[in-house]
Image (cartoon, rainbow, N blue to C red; front, side, top):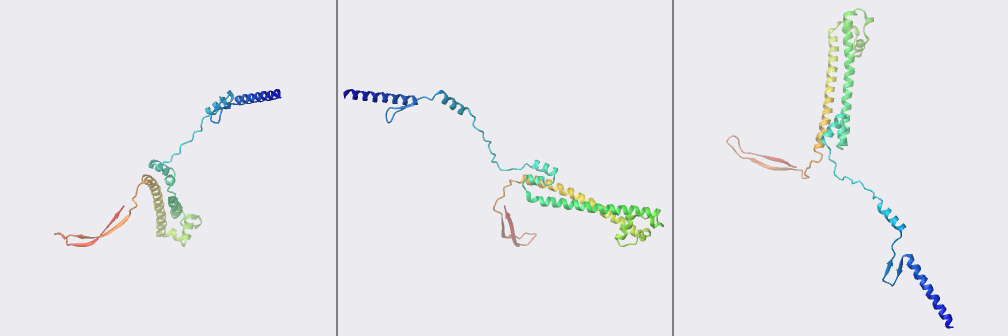
Length: 240
């Protein structure tokens, strides 16, 4: 009986020793409830940790949160390259219909006046030629001034003999030429105004206007002087 008990105790001691040895090899041995011994990591774990540390962290681009401030020089250059481009640069999109509407009106005026000027100019030149060379040969009269005569409800033969009608064609030619040239000048003016507007708008983009925009009206008395009598009135002042 004692022999069996001793064998059992030896077997339990061997099992306890094997269990402690296995725990020591696994990396940590718990001595008691408050003490833990951690075994150092092996070479494979160290290599993985070293590789993770060597990986570079991604760099994030800093976002510029500064408020937009247009450059007046750029605004003028953009507007000179293409009308309306300076207003787009200044983010004044509501001005684009005004800009392009003005240019379309100017271009239409130039085209219409130029067409009428060419018609009356050709009619006048050919009429003067027919007056000198083909006065008595209606079949050789130029179609250009004949069409103008019919357009005005006149008999073409009247233009051959009536100098007043000839002067009328010449005055119409000069009229359309004058307004064609004026339309070109106005177009150039609109172009310059677009450039000036882009520059001024960029300069005053961040102009600080006080919210206190008030109109003040108060009575005023002008004292009597040796040159004028006393007068009464109202004094108006705008505060901004």
